[in-house]
Length: 320
Image (cartoon, rainbow, N blue to C red; front, side):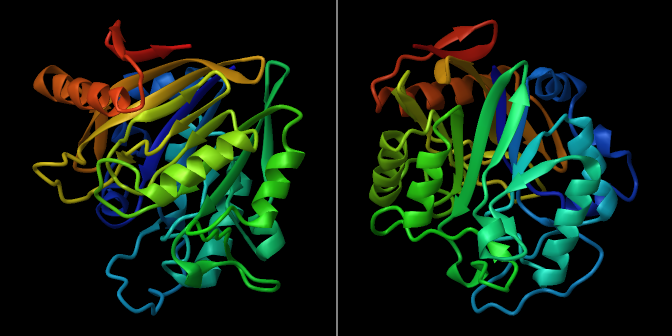
């Protein structure tokens, strides 16, 4: 099974404005869209709600609010997205009604989701995807903000406090999902960091010990290194995929990666990462000095975890 994973996909604000003038498919270079569609399963972090209702939520210290128009879901369909995680700090930007609208629009488009729901039980439910007779179970959660956590009768996200051990519901979900291959996609840690902090590293290692074949994190807006191997792999942060964000000239959050994970017998066999360039509301393949910058940074980040990264046909590759 070939699994494609990309990070934060923000379809609100400037991207939402672009969607009023151009076709959704025009926001991603055809070559990149084809790579996502050709994978057996494609998963991303949807960093916004999809709705035309609601109002910005009143939450102290919250500066950004992301809401995509209903037809933004057409881009996800065009990219062949099978599952999104909604467990992040923007799922409730426009309140509960907008989150419920998001679930409706995804369901209508035939796209699965994890990490959010109409109540706490639904928010914690995994999703099992089937491709070519193989199964992939996906679990999503976030460690911020606690105010967005779903409750017994309250829509919200699957929240986990990572300052201690993994929550019992998460351990149980991991245990029950071990019949097939397990992908965990957490939205964790602070923004604009170049490596995982100690809480994130501890949680990533715990998730591997609990049976996760692949852990694909996001939140930093900057890609991190890869830890593990055949018994389990942690992509601590997969970076951004599509947005209108201001670019940090040092951290270069406008440079990202599209991850392609080959799974055999429920375990990772090979990782390939395709360099990306995020322009304003448009994502394409990175070239030239941008591609070299990504290559050098990813090689250094992975070397810290003992991995050598080779370049094969323009793809950054780790083979186990």
